[in-house]
Image 1 (cartoon, rainbow, N blue to C red):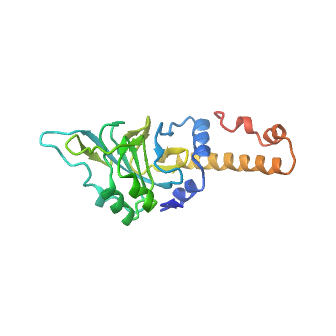
Image 2: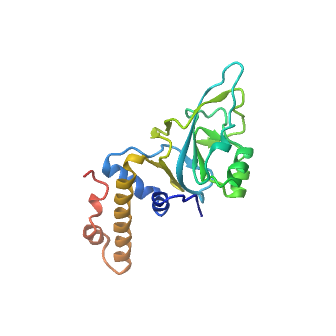
Image 3: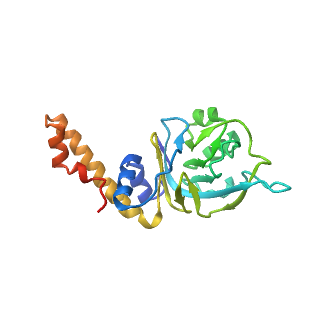
Length: 220
């Protein structure tokens, strides 16, 4: 089940896999693949618009790690830029429970999470670089919300579409989302056409040629 489909373009993205969206972005010259950000459970699916949070090292006295949750609109994806840190978490079971109850679509972290058992039990999608138990409290703090962040070498701005599946996460920049979606829909339909042709007895090379497979990801 895909969590969160609050508007027409998010609903379109939810019907496309991340591979087709990635191919579309390659064709259009748009960077949107979030490198090494993966689901804690392969069955997780997610689509929604980004609510972004930027973290930094804790001050003295330290600031909060996670009191932004009540400001996130239902159907959005929480996007946490913790600078790729793998020595302290910024997401755990309390945030998972609240986010799930409030109808938030999922969480994406450039960093790590903890309490994976609860997100698995609830079916709440969390995507990150990994998981470990050590808290981020007194180690990192929220610097800003709803600002542009970096997630796996991809730029994410508030309101961009986030799409996650078993292969990882892509971000569709708002200014390019219509072109990306249209191109990805064309790519996915061509690949489905190839499958149908092969099932009908056509050779794979002939099916690929007839559907322009080798040009699907090439830049226009």
